[in-house]
Length: 484
Image 1 (cartoon, one colour):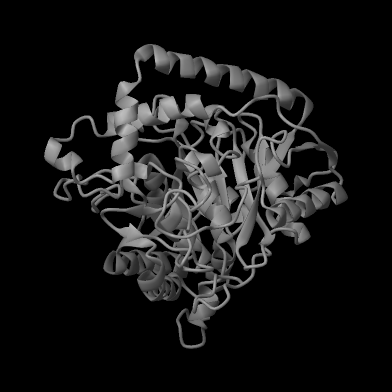
Image 2: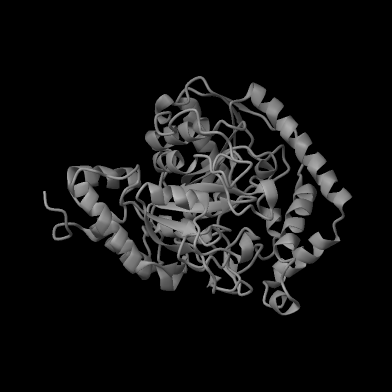
């Protein structure tokens, strides 16, 4: 069959998962050029209203797609993602493009001649790079706006935030500008925006996906996939999870394929359902109801579900010490003139971080180690912990915290996410419905360290059962999330 666009609905192409795109390439139903062109057109269409991208690479992407199409024509695809469009958060290095990290203090002039490990693996597997997605400055907060690129908005209601710090990546996936995205997560930064935008995201076990250059936020920072479903995330993890010599803390290769482990279901799994972390978190009623329905679906699929809570109190103070100190380290080399260009909120936490002593930092590490021990023992009893991903749906765009919430910093409204950066556990968010305003709700699945395959397997079971991906279309925005 001739590959082309004559009889191909470009809108339909942007709604397909990576797995389905690869099936189409194999059968000759369509080719990478048509798919890439459709994704680029979608990216340009959504950009004025949502602001998901800091830059697009149309010429390079179409060149990569044409080369891929020729390989498919010869029956010689290169790697697992040949011809699949991907986006990269503008925290991660991508050869030939500036990585400005949302900051006017970063000089765009430079060599920019190296890929981050995850980006290098994508390139080796034939992926097509559409562009770089937005981030708050140096990824410092749970929403996506920056002095450099402005405010990134929610696909379901552009008056609301897409979340952060991987907000551009989440919005791009939700709206069909590429089925696969690389994000980073230091306190919830793939899970928060994925929950707000109605897509899937996984924060893998620390070290499962190598990271270089090392993050100033240290071992809180993870690289993870943001996708339309768990099957696409498993495919992406099979590509990006190999070790890289530039990351001394990277894990050894995974024991098997994440894709091959998806079909095991949840029958017999021991699931702990914690609706509010023991009453520590006030959860919006419609969020709580959607999450409970997802938990009931897990039980219907054969999991043993018990409503119980992990044994820890809010570790916010320890997280703040580590996070603020990391932020101070990020900007330590900047001149006074460059610091004046920073996001005011970032300047505040950098000043707070600079006041922490080495003893303060080590005390926070002690809290972290105790929390890790507690969660390790918890998972001796339970295979999975299930919570809401975020206790509310998306709020107004352009602010760090919801108005009237009383929160001082973004961690005040993300109590379910950052604890598991402290413990380095794998945690995913799965879309499980919407509230009355049509805004997506996410459920979080957490497992013991190194049990990434189990998290993906349980998430896939929710998708297969119909409990996941029920977000629907945005109402009254002029935008329609892909696949809705």
